[in-house]
Amino acid sequence: MRIVGEIITNQLSKRFGELKALNRVDIVVQRGSVFGLLGPNGAGKSTTTRLLSTVLKPSFGTAQMGEFDIIENPVKVREITGVLPEEGSHTLYPSMTAYQNLEYFANLYDVPDEEIPERIEELLTFMELWERKDDKAGELSTGNRQRLALCRALLHKPKILLLDEPTSALDPIAAKRVRELILSLAKKYGQTFFINSHNLSEVQRICDRIAILDEGQILLTGTTSELRQKLHAKQEFVIRVVGDIKKAESVVTSQHFVESVKIGVDSLLVTIENPTENNSQLMRDLLNAGVNIVEFAEEEASLEDLYLEVLKGGDN
Amino acid sequence: MARSKSMVVALADIRMALELRMVKWSLVLSAAFGPFLTIALVAGPSLVLTGPELELITAVLMPMAAAMLAMFSIIPATMISANALVGEREQNTLEPLLCTPLTDRELLWGKTLSSILICGAILVLSTLASAIGIAAILLGAGKQLIIFPDLPGLFMLAVVAPIVLFAVVSLMIIISGKVQRVYEAYQMSGAIIMIFMLPMMAPIVSSPSGVVDPSMVWMWNLLSFFLAVVIAIITWAVAIKQFNRDKMVSLV
Image (tube, rainbow over all chains, first blue to last red; front, side, top):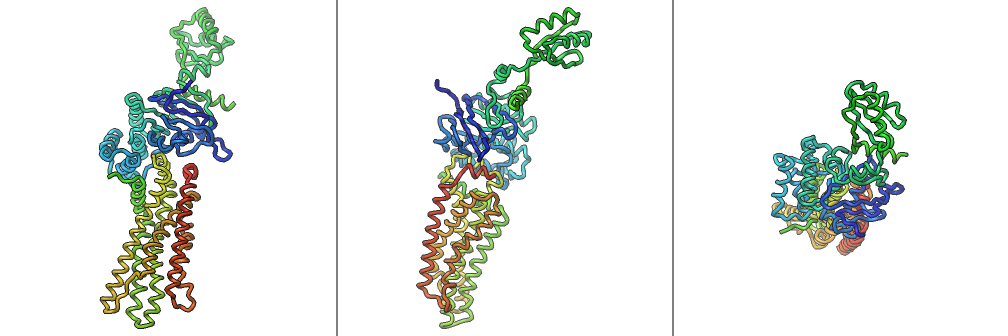
């Protein structure tokens, strides 16, 4: 069966001497989707971006970006790709103005001459940098430089955007605007986003699919709910009661299938082993003990919980 | 009319190079010292000497002046080309550039062109300034006019020097792929200049009697020319073949 995707990596690998920075990575990113690559420092996230942007050559395997192979057609790949490199705010020409930085790259990306001023104004206005267009990039704050670097990645309306920590160094309002921009571009124009991030809540909010990378290998990939299912994450339940919380606690802790209990003011956070079988037993015992239950609900594991669990598993 | 991408890169490099005080001063000094020394060497003796003595000294100083003028114009190229690649890497601007649809050839040609445009302009202007300066001084003093450059000098300035310039920049590109810091590239550039300086200056050094034979000047000029052509072809081919995006980024 043929896999359809805007970004398809096939056993993508990179070695630096003895170090395996990336080891046989297979990822499929659908057109118009937002894909998040998570992983600790040194996991290989930036190496993946550099391989996909054809700045680095794979030691083994390859990848397809749109219609083009990164080894056979690197120039075509670069034409359809916009890149925000690692520490994007430090990758601008400090002695050029904000406008000149964008104009330079617009020329290199073959943006038609007559469209360049309009395109730059549109992007700088959106990023609230139009007033600073004549300031040298080196004189802008880190956040403004990050926005400018994002403008540069978007200049030529690329089909695929590779963004390394796009909202790092941005204030919450600017970060929110960038997240909204990513979602609207993906939805409106079908642009595909590949995002490296440490910001788990951001990834959870905007990414359709997520992969967790560690030591150059993909540990897990899928949507947040798929990850949850794949991990068979221990299920936590919130039991909210009215009245004697201590009585509820003693009933819960006496159960052999309860792994842990955290006590709140009027609720218990309980980790239950094999909940499908044991939940009804626990509820029955609580009711028999006269505990007045007002809520018995599953507490969904956050992406952070899943991420930590995956990495913990990787350590073992 | 759309400019070629190499020219876009070259113009950006020139703009950035001119922001660097060290490069700016090296350009100013080269543009000033070259014509100043040439005028002093060629016009100076005419003001105090006459007859066979003047002819003898002029025969020695004319090729020396042409070679020196060429060298003064080429020296800044090492700094501009070092900044063009290693400097970009040092200030983290190389990676976004490598992400653009520039081919390796377009990128390297752009980086080469930036040095050639600036140094070529210095070479032409310095030659013109020297020729005019010498003529003005001699005519003003009522002395016999000396045409600078003479034919071997013109060959040196119009043919040998541009090829040497290209060879120097190609060598600097190869060096840029091997070093991590701009100052390391600067240090190596001194040795590169020496390679070319020796044959260019050889006519003066190689005449034990102090009398410069014109055929000797031509021989050394042609030797410099062939050396420059061979080095330029080899280094450019090696620079293109060995240019390694992996290495350029990994050296960061």
